[in-house]
Structures are given as structure tokens and as C-alpha cells.
Length: 326
Image (spheres, rainbow, N blue to C red):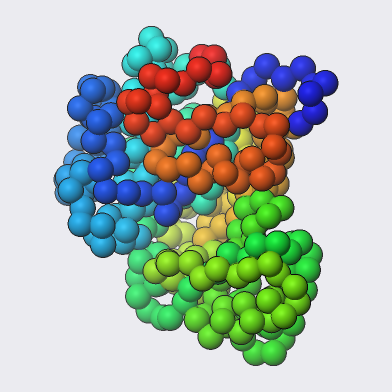
């Protein structure tokens, strides 16, 4: 994004799994009645007190895929409600905010789709709950892992991944996060072999990730199969503003293409860098990261150092936000 561009809009970005932490959403729910209502409704739909798990943990339970996915989704929804409440904005889940575009990382797509009016909150949460459950089951069925590759171009990484796979190992690219980071995923043996080959080929470092399984790989096939009927029944509307999907890494408007993308991204790479570049090309000079953590801000800054991203996760960051108009 060049300094000469006349950028006046802002984008809303939503985090995915891994952003959770014990204590998340507690202050939001204590200070904002609308945020608390999000978790109350969420607990009714899910059938358990998810706010209590967010508040008290233990971390092992919150980090479980079946818990962390709905927890992060609800946290993002609670942030939107608290923001609208504090700024006097009409509409549910931030739909009155004057944003120019939206996207979400993996799980965060569901949050973004509620924000742009393509999904209803209750419908999205039901599918997110099933998505977390089915992905947890896929993780429990086999040994899989992931690793972040730093300091090597995506095309070079793809070549090494292809060579490793042709040698009989199960591995693939899972996330194109930024020019500085690409994530691989697959069997434990496959990721280890590919990591060794990447280091030999000149990667600055390859970092094993502490994850429960091989997300965004063919090892998630059972999750795709089980989630498909839920997605087939999901009511999806045309987004009210530009939405960028992970599977194509581009703007998606057609509800059936959105549905296909939500299904395919379970086993296929998340093209986050492409989504961010698409958002920036809409003329967005700033962005809000709405939900737990600051992972997306780091990725965006590595994609475009001039981009300004505010991470809004709690009452303090909500009250201190300054650069983004509503």
C-alpha cells in the first residue's frame, strides 16, 4: 500500500484457532451486557457453559479443538457487540460498522461471514461447534503435526514439499500466512522429513508447531466428510460487503462458492496472504483484528509494513482504539 493511495476505508479481520488463552472474554462479558449475551446464547446452543471454560480453563480443555473453535468464534462476536455498544452503532454483530471489507483466518471465516451478513449467528455457531468436534476426531484418529517455515519463498517451499510427497511422505502446504512464513502439515513422519529437506534447501528455520493434528491437510478428510451435510443445510446469503475467502484467496460473493470454500479449506491451504492483499487493494488503510490474540496483526505487517492494524480483544484495547472510524 503506497503512501500516494487515497485510502479511507478499514477492514475487519477475524482470528482462527490458536489465538485462545485462559481468561479470554472475561472482562468483555463483565463490562458489556451485549458481549455477555453472546456467550449466554452460545452456551445454550452448545449445551455447556463455554464462558466458564474461557475464564477458568484449564488450558488443556480450552486448547482442545472442539472447545477452542467455538470459544474463539464467540469471542470475536462478543468484541463486535461490545464495540457496537460502546460506539452507539446500530445492528447486530457489527453490521452497522462502516467497514470496507472483511476476511478471517481459517475458523475466522465464520466470524467474518456473520459480520458481512452472509451467515446468521446461531447457524454459524452450530456449524463451528460441529467443525471443532469433527476436526478433534480427525486429530485423535492419527498422528499428524505442522511446522512453520521461515525465510524461504513459497515457490521454493512448494518444490520441496512436492519432492517429499513424491518420495512417499504425507505432507502439504497448510497456510500461506505471509511472505515471511508458510506452514506445512501432514503426518508426523512426513513433516519431519520435509522439515529436514527444507533446512537443507536453505530455509532460515523450520519451527515445529504445538498443535493437536495436521490441519488443512488430507488427514482432515473425515472432518470434511462429516461436516459436508451440515454445510449443505447451512443458509448462506450474498455478503453485504467484500468478503475474501481462504480457499480461493480471493473475493467471493456467490453463496454456493462460499459454501464450497468453507468445505474445501478443511483439507486445503489457507491463502491468507492473498486474502490480505485483496483486502488492501479495496482501499483499506487500516484494519481491526477482532478477537483474541494479535497473530493477524503480525501477519499483516509482514505482508505490508505500511498497513495499520489494531488488535481488539478486551475492554482496554476497545477503549484505546483510535485510528479506525466507525
